[in-house]
Length: 252
Image: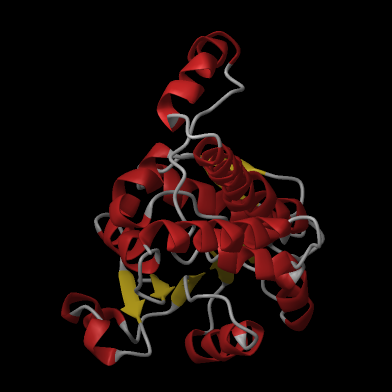
């Protein structure tokens, strides 16, 4: 009997482990041995089908993945982490087995339900031996686990999609809320009343979203900017810091 391995049992990895283990043989692995589910330890010696990478990105991400590959000897690797564009290609160059990138969407506190709400995009290098068969098997695995999937043309497109069309886009929209809040206060007008002017426009056109003007914290929007390090997108962090100074003056 073959097993799947979920490496990294954090906010993404543990929900993926829970979902997959309901229908398949899954071994949950983490550098913190206390996080490894006791129920999965009996599968440790089974041959590995997919190695699901759910560890946070760092400068040592590639060596860590290669080390995990050596440890579990999977038939294919699936990366669920948000990663620097080009990382999938970099890892694939070093391995003969298929490396699939499958970006994750959802809010961490409800990730288990969001994994089944959002389509799980995936992409791979079609020139690699067994890549099509592995990707088909991955799609079937997800489908049987209640997760929809959709294939993209290549990993770099999906790697960029996660940063540009998800977290950074969200950051830009929050930035505009931050800027409009600063201006509203400058003229001593009510933020919500000012924004009520756009309610019907957004209702009919869907392109005037109103967001709460809060400081961007957490470990998605701002940290993901560093993965791309684009001068234009880095303005998100600069505006966020300007807004923080604005908030600090309000609390004095």
